[in-house]
Structures are given as structure tokens and as C-alpha cells.
Image (cartoon, rainbow, N blue to C red; front, side, top):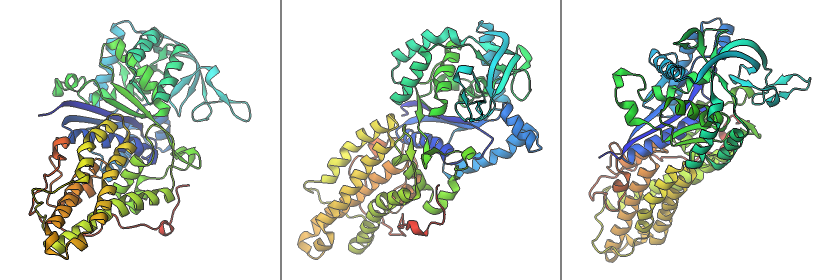
Length: 525
């Protein structure tokens, strides 16, 4: 039976550039959680998508001689193909230009209008087209020539003066938000993000412009069609679109799947998700996500990876060298989620060779080869009285540790817990020396015990590594006659002793051939 629903999202990504390593970082992390929680017995909704409205999109399209819709349509394959390449198994891909999404946006803002949370006024201040964000003058920085620039992207800002906008009474929610943070101390993760947001809200909230009237590329407000919904006030609703909000064809799904367990976002957009979004939902009387996790940036030479900085390497470049599964494993295990992480090819090769080629891949190869040599490629039956089993002792504690790490998005900790078992199996094989046990009939039972234990540990390791590396885990399991598909109770599936004796064992090619960094013809810098 299902443990219930589990809903998770990535950001709804801007369409102005194809996904790079930083974009993929958020998406792979959400996919890792979604895959694990499916194996853990939950009915998972995993929502991602494209943020297609706003002035920035309209300007980009015009510069390319295209209509905004044509530009957005041309970008969809880039996202779909990138997520297919990285084996992202989402349940809904929301485009904010879809009619179903527009219905949800108009429903939410129409409800807030009826409840009296909106008013019309003129905006005075500064606007950054690139960040799609309004700033008070006190928030701005100056460039070398003394001109005001955006504090986030350091581009020039525009003076917005006299434009008539609709405003959301965000200031009404300062105290309700602070109470919510206090009552839900885990809502903002990690702790550094929480501290930043709480400090920001305590500093005072200003009412928020949620419409634009100087261009028409957006969802029209239902009560004032001359205004289109401001991009953030539009895109945030896409999370609800992905679980059936305002969709008669998916009646009941929204109530069943909300609130979300996690919104996974980059730390630069944490305020939108931890201040504006929950305030909108409080006003509307809608459920707020259990947690927002603002992860850190990927850094090369100390700089954030992004297309605008010219260091936004594409995932396909690394997949060609390392393969999809090793790509996923490196970014989810070596870069501590929640902190900024410096990445390099040298470190990627080091992790690949140490964890995947030498520890995990080599373990599979040597045990499968010995099974072929000593048991004609069949899983031996372990004797009834097998004696002490150091592998089972670690395995029996693995679910609790792994599940706890995954609940906190501690992917590095989860991977380390599995690698602890893999390393112990390698040591167990060395200590037991099956090649010596095979020399005498007197140690036949001991040999069978050692080989069964090693094969059973491989089965369990492959199951836990499946959310990180779905393809190679499925292949390792296939080689011992086990099917990965259909696992919906990983705790029960990884209980010791379930590998059937007599299963055919296939040797096959190495899962992870060793790599030499000197043979790679590009750099991350």
C-alpha cells in the first residue's frame, strides 16, 4: 500500500538560455528525491517546467526577430532533451504559456482581488529586466561610473516612474510570516537561508507590484485585462498547475497532493519562495509547502556558473566523458547540498575512479567473475549456519541512515552510507580470500557463504544507488537476475537474504571503466 503522496518541485526555469550545469543541479536533486520516495512507497508528483512570460522574454524574442511564443516554443526542446539526457523522471512539465496555467493564475489572483488584498497604484522605483525584480534605491549598487546597477546581476536598472500597477498587500503579512517561521522552524532550509529570510522580513515588507501595463506578454488579470500578471506572481503558480489546480480534468488531485514536501530552488530565489509565495498562499487560504530548500551555487574559479558569465558548461559535455549516471552521482554526492561547491574535472575524475570504478564497479566485476569461476555463473546457496556476517550488520542499519539523509536532502550522507557497505564488501572479500577457499572441499561451505554474502550485498547496494544511478543499478541487478522495476518498499526490498540461490550471474563489461583526466580535452574553467 502507498504511504501517501509526496510532491516536489524544481524552479520553473527561465527560457532565455538552455539548461547548464547549475540548472541541472536543481533538477537532478529533485529527481533523486522523487526516485527514492517512489521506491520508498510514496505516490510522487514531481513538477518542473518553463517560465515563459515577462519583459525579459519579450525583449529576447524581439532581438531574435521572433514573437515571444515562437521563441518559447523554440526553447522547449532544449529543456526536454536535457532532462531526457539526465534521466529526469518528472510527472508534469508546466509551460506558463499553457491555457491550463493561465486559468490557475487568473483564479488565484481573482480570488485575492475579491478578498481585498489587491489595490491599484503608481509604481516609483527601479526595475531590473534580467532579474525581473523591483528594487528600492537603497538596495541598489553602483558601477565604476556611479550608475545604479542590480545588486544580483550587476546590470543597469531602469527607472520605473508613474506606471500604473496592481499591488499585493504583502506588508500585511510581515507578522503572519514571522509567526509561521517560528511555528515551522524547518520550513526554510538550510539554516543559513532561514536566518537570511527571517532577518529580511523583520526589516519590514513593502507591498508588491504584481502586474505590468507597459507590455502585454503575460497572463491578463481577470478583473483588469489591460494588466498582465508580473512574472513571479505568474510563475510561482506553476507549482500548483503541476498538481491539478483549477483543472476540472484533474478534480481532487490538488487537494490530494498538496501541500508540497519540498520546493528545491537556488539560494538566489529563496526570498520569492519563502516570503512572496507563502504570503500569497496565506491570503488565498491555500496550503504552504512543508519546506523550501535553497541550495548553493556551483563555482568555477570562485564564480557562480551561469550563461551570462560565459562559464555555463552544458550537461551533455560532461555526460560524453563520464556517462549519465556518473554525472548524477558526482554532483549529488561530492557537492554538499545547501552549500556552494567548487567543481573541477580533476575532482570529478577522482570521485569517479575512487567511488565508482575502484569501489563499486570493481566489486561487481570481481564478485561476478568469481561466481562464474567457482559456481558456473549461478548464485550459490548459503549454508544454514553461516556464522557471523559483518555485511549484514551494516546492511541492517542502512535503511534508517539512508532514509534519514534523504529526508533532509543530505545526498552526500546518503551516498557515503552506501559506499560504507561497498567498501566493507571489498574488504570482506580480501579478508575471506575466496580464491584460497576454492582450493579445498573442506572450505566449500565457507566459500558459498562468502560468495552469497558478497552477491547479496551487491543487490542491496544497487537498490540504494538506484536513485543516484538508475541505469547502472538496473544493469548490476540484471546481471544477478533481479529486476529494479516495481520496487515500492525499499526497506523490505533491502532486507537481507532475498537473493534467490540459482539465479544466473552475468559478468559483462565493467560498469565504470577507469578514466584518465589527461585524456579529457576540455576544462570546466
